[in-house]
Every structure is written in C-alpha cells, then in structure tokens.
Image (cartoon, rainbow, N blue to C red):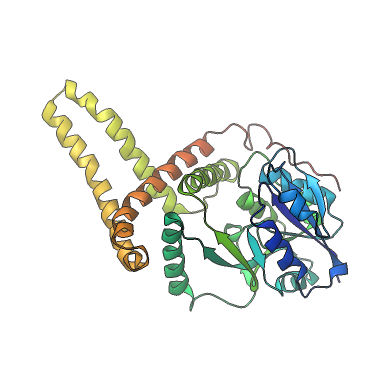
Length: 343
C-alpha cells in the first residue's frame, strides 16, 4: 500500500483547522500509511496552536500564498502520493481509500474527489447555494457516478491526490498564479490521466464575505487569461465571449461622449444602442433567478439583486482575464516563477 502525505495550506484558520484534522484522523485508511503536513502562512490567530495538539508536522510558508504552500508540501512530503485539501474542508471516512486505489494504474497521475458544498448564511453564499443546487439537480442524472477520466478543466486541488514524482517531473505548482489548480491540471494532463472519483467525498464549507468572493473571481480570472497566453487554451469559451462583449460595451460607454463633438443626437443614439445588451443581460439573469428559485431561498431581494451581482461578476471576470492575457511572466517571454522542486 502506498504511503500518502496529506498537505493542508493554512492562514488564520482557527475556526476550521480542528474539525478538518479530526475528519482526517477518522479516515478508514491505516494511520501508519499517511502523514499530515500543515503548511502555515504565518497565521496571526490560534491556527498553529490548535494544529499542534494533533499528530501533524507544521511547516512555515513565508510566502503566504497557495502555490508556495503546495510546493513546500511537495518538498517535505515523505509519501509517494500527495493528497491536498483545504482547512475549511471535511473529508469523508473513505476519501483517501477511494483516491489511492487508482494509482495502481501507472498511467494515472491525479485523482480528483467529489465535492459536497455546504454554504453559510451570508447573502452571497445563499446565491451560490441556489446556483449549486440548481445545476446539481439538472445534471445529476447525466453525470457518470463511476470513476472516469476527465480533462484538466475539472481540476481542483482540494480533495485531490497527485503522484509526487509526477509533480516533480512537471516542475511543481506555479507560484506566480494565485489559483494554480487549472495550470497544474493542464501540465499533468500532457503525460498522465486525470481521474474523477465522486465516491471520495469532501465537504467544503463556503461562507466568504461578498468582498472576498469578488476578489476570488477577479484573481481566478487572471489565471484563465494566463492559461490562454501560456498554452493557447480556454477554460470556458462561453465565459470568454460574454466577458469580451461586456468589455466592448464598457469601452463603448467610455468613448461615446466623444461623439458629442459630432452630434448630440448621435451620441444619445450610440449610448442607447450600447445599453441594450446590458438590459438583455440583466433580463437573462432575472429569468435565471426564477429558474434557480432564488426568491424561495432568500426572498424577492435576492431575485432583484441577482442580475446586478451577476453583471458585477462578469465585469470583474472580464478585467481579470484581460490582466492575465497581458501578463509578462508567461511562457514565451520568460518562465513562470518559483516552480523548481528538488526530489
């Protein structure tokens, strides 16, 4: 049986780390066959104090971010398989057993577990919960519940196991990206199979404040733009098209006053034509809100606010992708930073 290193990046996770560690120590996988590494980004709360009560190795991450934390975990890992999870995650008792069984096939480099999202009571969390429940119900019959191959686009690092030698071979996680999941997935997929096993369940507790969720959307979109610059691939073509449309409209609004020098009437007409697609998008998300039953979950306020929140997310996504597309630290200009790992 393989020896597994479980890597948990943390920073100020005193509310979550204990429950996470308890769920891991309750695994049906033999405890002598795995170790737990807590990679802490200089927490200022009681995270380290709480974690030190449990049989774990605590290692400092001076760079704070997730990419460096994962790379430190890879360097320090004693296992030939590395399982990654987050501090706000609870793992199912069979999680590791189901992940590890696939590595008997030498072609498999990565196994992604199933995710059950548990949403908090914040307004934005309830909107996310409504979308999550709607799409889960919509595709539940179509989804293949048996373990199956997936593309790099399904990649996420929480609840996922990867061969250590595969990570070393491809150079580890890119530390120049805030959310390196898809990047590592793409590079792994060039040489290895990626398997999805929904039986290996984790429960992800999501209750971020609205401001933090907006920052997350922006930063993950930077990664999407960077992926295209690097490899010429899109994570989601539909979202790219919508984002480019919104950007075009925004720049149109900015420059439409210039038409005043030509004609006031022309300027009004141009601005009106540019505004029509925005009205269309607001209408689209209003109808989407009816479909996902947002009113039943958080009332009429949610139904009225949803279109404008969705529009804000599209704008953030658009600017994030543009920033990713024009970044200099991409393949073809100079190599990504911080992905050298020694075995």
